[in-house]
Length: 526
Image (cartoon, rainbow, N blue to C red):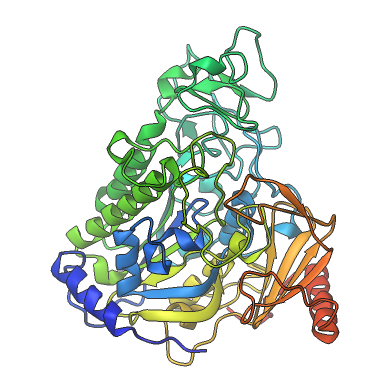
């Protein structure tokens, strides 16, 4: 499998450059330590971007990255929910190897403990200034969870980031506040913040008791504390001066990212920015200027807002003369879901749009749509524009990016992060990973393993969730084992487990060995 260059993409790249997307010339970049920006969308499916075939929605800034870079048709995250994918992306370890890596609760302590090697700590050791801006959802604080009114430690700064500006959980979970480095931003002492699992008072309005006041109704769950006319998962009180407006999330994170790129980082030092967007996760409450701008309702509007964020970041690089000195990776934390707890017409307005592209499944699922997502690398002047069908994954970024900057990784770190750096850069003859294990959430026991064109699914309880994204979110009864030929059957409809017995037995054994062995990255490698 090899990358190829699309003449049409080269033409569009030239048009984008003339339009001002990239102001620097297209000679090979001179730096061997590029600035690095990883942009991770939230619940963005393979088919949610127009460069992957979407027609109901247009994503020009994401498309521009693809036109000037390498678009992967087999780009993956490692899990089909947010917390385990983010854990694996940062640590280079499959999340199923560690308990407590399922969707983090609002009161969850720090999941990644100090002393754990991460993509950020490794790059910082390599001389990078590091920042994470956006959604965190990996817990904060010690064993008892976050001390919202004190110091939120440990957190990102203890695992390799020089600075952070966070939504601490995810926006359908409380609290709706920002965390800057170790503290809740704008919190005042005489209005302390309390976060808990039980309603502290029968007088506190919830999505059940005050449902008629909501500006976006809930469909399942998401019916506890109300903030900004939207009920959430969990309870909180106080911290009113620290609370943000949902509509301002994207603008705030773009502003903070621009500030980091333009002012905050030491001049001359390369930087690593993890821009963790919230679009198109629920609740889909975008800024007013994006509301109603897509035909897909609030979910489509959120995708357009994400695309705008990317345009703002790339324009900032151009303004600073950093376009050719910056490697951008665009990816998603998992596949799509339509109704994920709020009545926002995601199903009703979906029409013929296929959020997962040609694949079955989405968020919560180990079908291809759960983990095969948009994946683009762009480094103008270094990465030759084109399309690659090599298999790469967000879990590989820790090892691969450090290899690109010639920084060694200890054998006992990043145990499942393979070096696919040449594939990410589109080098001739480069190969991606030869296999990939996929999981759903936490330690539920649902796995997929892809080797070449073959894909094995293992469902411990015979249940799969969100198999058909366009329908109501529900469980589907499935066999414990399923085997698919992805070349002939990309939507995983024809189970060959009982007929292709040799391949079925081989992959069943390979999956279990990978789980039992505790690592998949060979020793003695970057």
